[in-house]
Amino acid sequence: MSQELKVGIIGTGVMGQDHARNFAAGIRGGLLVAVADVNTQAAQELADTVGAEHVFRDGGEMIDSGLIDAVIIAAPDRFHAELTLRALEKRIPVLCEKPLAPTAEEAARVVKKEEEIGEELVTVGFMRRFDPGYLALRERLETQRDGALLMSHSIHRNVEAHPDGSSEDTITNSGIHEIDIIPWLAESPIVRVEWRGGRPSSLITKRQDPQLLLMEDANGTLHTVEVQVQAQYGYDVRCELVCETASVELPRVPSLVEQNPLLISKDLTAGNDYPADWRPRFAAAYRAELSAWVSAALERKRPAGAASARDALQSTIVANALVESMHKGETIDVPPIQEVLG
Ligand code: ISE
Image 1 (cartoon, rainbow, N blue to C red):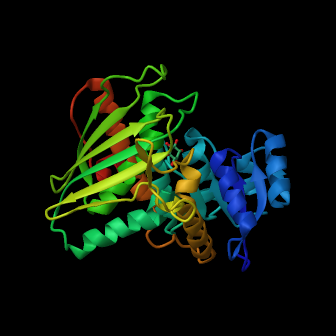
Image 2 (cartoon, rainbow, N blue to C red):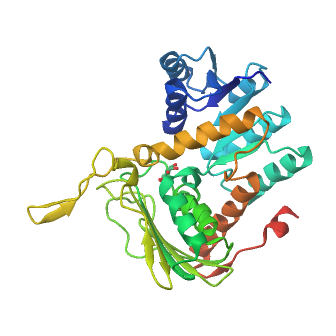
Image 3 (cartoon, rainbow, N blue to C red):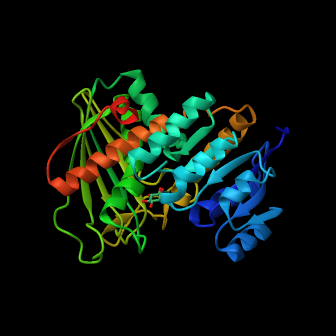
């Protein structure tokens, strides 16, 4: 591998564009050389904007082309596992957007393939693990100065739902962030889950919105997660850890503090600005994730602290259990990862 990592991006949607722009702004050790999308016009436009040399219609062909040292997969979720397996065939490092796959079966195939190869080639883009806010929460818990973690409450609201999304996608595409980050914070796997719908918003008919995910970890700690995809007012991610002697929570919009440090109370309202989606909220996390991935991929490693294929399989297993709870209306015990891997 050359000293500069030649990267290709598959997918020119929101995340493909975001990663490409981050490269264009400068990621030490990495160079974006190719873009792939079935919509070749979109691929060409993005490549022109960020100065990438090659354009492909087919992401698999780009992986096989020999022109790239590593690949970022930002195609729709249902293609993630297949493309990751293709990159593993070529033995090139992958940064796959979350989820690794919507189903545990597909994610398990990736874990097995990577373990068969015996190299840390897969990183899954759970970028919250690089967010200064979530890192501070974890560090605070590690100090144990607030006593044991008793409960956590998370809120994850999007302005507008993806038009093709289903109720199940709310879990596997949006709630998956909390499904990953909560056991990472609590340092304890999720063992039992329950899904509730409740009164649906009249603003969205295609999926149940909002949804309440209740997760119990191996210590018996309960974690509530409200996920809403059509919240209208702003992109809002919150997390509160209820410990024995303190409540510790994320500031409302930490990454906007520089732009908008004031919480203004005026005209009978109090408030701050909200971003319209996750890019400004997690901009620092995405850049840190990309930089860490490029440096680690040059060494054919996964960055310290990033989600592995196994971590991503674990979150998909929990997501699938929540979908099962949605379908059956019951509490579901989460199967152990070994059982799924067979
Ligand atoms: C999107 O794919 C993301 O990953 C965002 O972080 C999340 O907030 C959103 O709900 C997802 O659709």
